[in-house]
Image 1 (cartoon, rainbow, N blue to C red):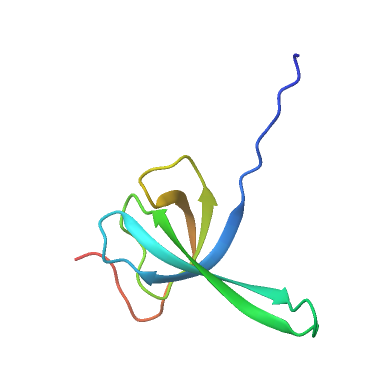
Image 2: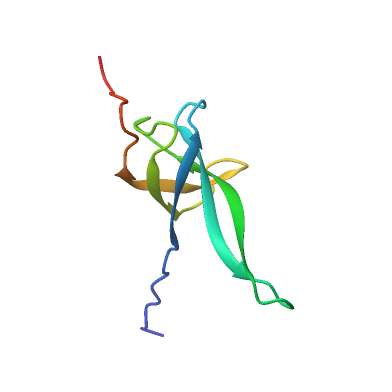
Length: 93
């Protein structure tokens, strides 16, 4: 029983579609799924709410998020990094 099991947390990449909430962003994650009968690849998307502690993200940013404990009713992911900030938007004063 001395073995320790490490939980691997899933990291996903997506675009920020909303940052209107305080310390919360909505991320659109797209994936490609093969159709069962026709074999054609289709795009499927999921909207995930993630925790952004410093309110650093803007709409259009490409971000990396990971799973974490539930932070609210809908929010169980947190921001890892902003991979590609949207051009032309400056943060700060």
